[in-house]
Structure formats: C-alpha cells, structure tokens
Length: 459
Image (cartoon, rainbow, N blue to C red; front, side):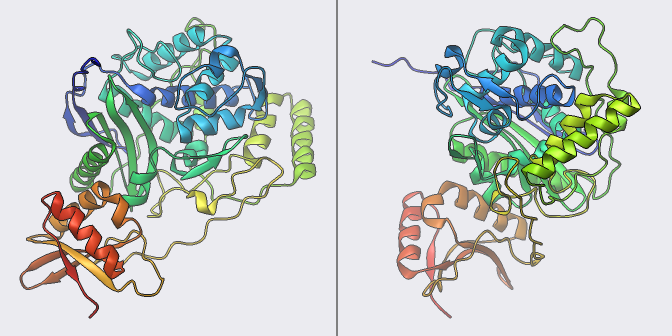
C-alpha cells in the first residue's frame, strides 16, 4: 500500500510590483518546499553570470552524468553531449527541466552543491531570509525550503533586474536545442488577461506552487501560491489573488526598483561590491523585438564591439555579451514602466531560433472591448451556440465565475469566447462560439460538477 502524503500547507502573497507594497498575505513567512520555483533563482544567477562575463549564451556546455540522470520533468539531455547555454536557460524557464537546471548550475559553479551555496548567498543578499537552497531544480531535499514572501521577492527581482530576459516566461513554447517544449504555465497565460509569467512548481511534498505576474495599464501585480491541491485549483486561486491585487492597487504609483543584490560570483560574499553602477546602466525600457542580424552581421557586430572596447579600455566581455544578447534573447514588451496593456511577447509572435534566424516583430494588439473578457473565438462555421453558467449581481462576480469555470473545464471550453451580458436582471456569465454538440457536452460536464448551466441557441 503506498504511503499517504499529507496535504501541503497553503501560503500566499500578493504585492504591487511597482512599489513592493504587500496587498495580501497568508502564512507568507512559513518555510515550505518551493519545488520548481527554485529555478527562478537558478535562472537569476544564469542571467547574472552572463551579465558579468562568467559565461556567454553561446558557450557550449558538456552534460555530466549527474545532470543527465535527473528525474522528470526533463529536456532529455544525454551524458557527454554538448548544448549551447541559451538552450539550457530556455528549457529551465519554459519546460521547468530538471536536467537543464542542474547543467546550468554545474556550468557556472563547477558542481551543483557549489551552485546551491551561491543560490543561498544571492537569496540572502536579496533579503530572502527564510530560504535555503540545496539544489538547482527544486526536487524535495532536506533543508531545501523557502516561503511565499521570499519567492515573491525573487519574482520581483527577475522582473526588474533582468527585463531583457523576462519574455522567456511568457512563451507558450520554445525551441530548446534538441526539441520544442511547452510552457508549464501556459494555461494561466492563455486564460488570464495581462498574465505574462513567471514560474510553476510541483512536487508531492510541496503541492502545486506558482509565482505569477500580470500587467494591466500602468498596474502590475505579482501573486504567489504555495500548496495548491491541483494545477486547475492553483490557477484559479492565483487568478483570484491577481484580481484582488488589481482591485487594491492604485491606478498610478511610483516605480521603486528593488536594489540589485551584491555580486559575489563563485567566491562567496567576501569582497563583493555593489552593483549600483551596472544597475544605473540597466535599460529603462525593454525594447520591442527587432530583426536579428544574420550570422555574418553578428560576427561583425561582436568584432566591432571588441575593437572599440580594446581602444577605450572598457570590458571586452561586457561588449561581447551585449552583442550576443541583442542577437538572440531580444527584449520584449516593457514589463514595468510602459502603459501598454499587452502582455509580454507571446511565442506565436516570436521565432525561437539561434543567432542565425531572424525574429519577427510582434503584431499590434487590438484594444479589448470594455464589456467583454475574451480568450479565443473560433471562426469556423456553425459555432453559433453557447452556454450560460449563471446570473450575478456584479460584473466582477460574473467574470470570476467565467474564469474559474474555464480553468476547471478546459477540455470542452478551450477556444470559446467568455462574455458577460448585462441586463436589467443582472450580469449573465456566458461562453460563446461553440457548436451545438460542444455546448451540449460542456453543459453535461458542468452539471455533473454541480455547476448551473443551460445552452444558448443561435439568435
């Protein structure tokens, strides 16, 4: 008989990302298993290592037996193969691949244990006082613990300290060198207006965890959940918390960037110096995607940077890094200051390829109607039916029910239009753009869940 696993404790935190103000918390300082939220720190240090010249995005990384033997979720790396560092970053960020995360740690620090110590040092420098890392991937290990408050802090640092890489977390899928992998957070990215990151996590000990960020107008909210009972219920709870955040946050607020933590490399905190100079040079805005230069142009750009750096006595490695970053990990929509309401760059608008492939610019998004919450609407013939899942006293309640229902019944409601219809009797919560057969099946499944539902025929 299998051993029973106790339910993971629930914890949550919601902040206004612009100011860091806490808008809601529950058990936020309880030390819990972070699961793959751990990879947020793995990726933070990967970005830091590239920025400081320890490694480049194109550095070939040889995969060790230790990395290749990590259990799923994994990319499928083999012992002895080599793969560009950029693909390990993509696999860890999007697929949440354990083998890629371990390979990142070994490539930067020589061993996973040394990398975990660096992760903990960096966490302390950020003020993450309740966090201790023992590995690079987040699989359950004694003493490997964090808290909702600490992971929210880490999510905010990723957003502000490395905006040029933030688009990774909103990609529905990405090419990771050996195959294309889907995003573990794609359901929330598809369903929640303005969602553009950040990271999911799950183990039996941790439950279903998620740090999520969403932007609407000038407002940006970060919400964290530990201990969800399922992926769907976790996503629904995070959606509620993001809604709460948008209700409580002021429409306008000053941007108060977090202080970038001291950079210590692999040597420990002794002799670490402030990164204030580098922070001052960080981009105020994350630029729109631009066409990547071809292979020959990329070499010319890098060479020109090297020559100029040599003449001026500046850091050659920093110039090379800038050229490589511009050639591949192109910045996306501004994650913080811009009033643009579009989420960060979606994968269908981004060519996920190496330096030799040109990226296409993101198409302009059309304004959303004020009276509707829209996901996707099918244009195929016969999709004139819909379903009604109740009448409510406020638009907010109707939209909340629509989102909960969509997340709980994704099989039959995927691709439908969520719409709130106002009448003298209240706010009708409906899904539209279905065939009669789809509407009938959806209603039967929802009624089986004790959800009110009736079909709406063509008008």
